[in-house]
Length: 287
Image 1 (cartoon, rainbow, N blue to C red):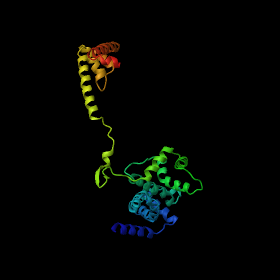
Image 2: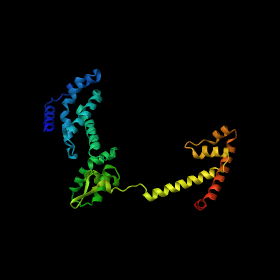
Image 3: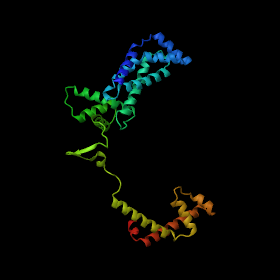
Image 4: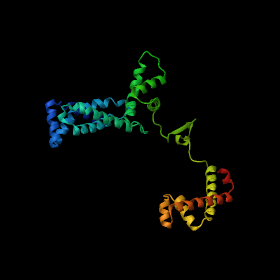
């Protein structure tokens, strides 16, 4: 009840604010623009709060509190007042409408669903116009299938058919909590979270991968023992480090040419391959 009375009081104050004549509006805008007169800016904003309330009423169908919509619209109104250029000789209401609407639309997109929607201009147009266009097409004499309706909306808004179908599905259903219980008969049988498929490997696959990984590490360590000190240094620097060294860097460090480093690396890799095949013949079949 407190919120309801506060909303009514805010609306009453806004509707009672006096209209501004064009000359008075221009004078207040210049006072803010030239002298940063906060009172002038606030008078412009208060005089146009009825515009905020009127626009907020158009977004009530999204199920969000009217007071929150008005607050967001007021933020857009203040932003418009701060950016308004009186030299353009445009009425403030015309300029402010865009800022108010943009602020409310952003609020709706952020709070209508826990799933974040598209933020491109095309996706916003789809979100706010899909229901209206669908209702308009339904009023015609043509008997259109759901797909035909989606196709016409996609063409009208310049988006893909898949985007229209996805958005229509989102607008047709409500968010469901993963902690919501699933009832089976007279008792609860768990939560929705229990029905989500797990992408992790199965326990037997995890054990198998662990054993195979340990086996391969053992084979590699045995093969590395076949290399001499210089070959080992090159292989570690070139193949086993996250930031591999260049041939030129290794050549400078070892006092040899980069071509010689490449030759040693090639020979070391051949020795490793031979040692691995001898250790585990199955690797020869895989390669």
